Image 1 (cartoon, helix red, strand yellow):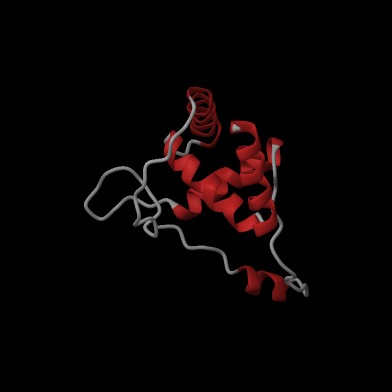
Image 2 (cartoon, rainbow, N blue to C red; image 1 turned 135 degrees about the horizontal axis):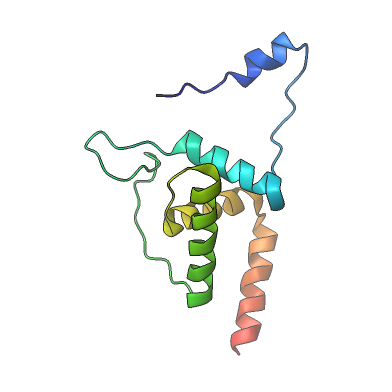
Length: 121
C-alpha cells in the first residue's frame, strides 16, 4: 500500500509555509489532479472487487442524461488510458460531485436551482 507524502514535513524541509489548497480546474493539469485523486483515494476492498473510496457508504441513484453519461464514460476511458488508473464513469461522477459540492457556495447552488425552475416553467 502506498503511503501518502507528509506535505507539512516537505514544506518545513523546504523552509516553506502551507497556505491552503490549490485546485486545478480543467485541461492537462486538471486531468493530472483527477488521476492523483483517484490513486490516493481508491483502494481495493478487503474482500476483493473494484477499487473504491472506503468513505463512500451511502448509495443513491443519480439521474443523468445520455449525453452526460457518455461524457463521463469518455473521461473515465481517457483517465484509464493515460493514467493507468481503473475508474468507472459513476465513480468519476461521485468524485466530481464531491469536488463541486466543496467548492460551491450556497448562493451559487441557489442560483442554479432558480435557473432550473425558470427553464422548466
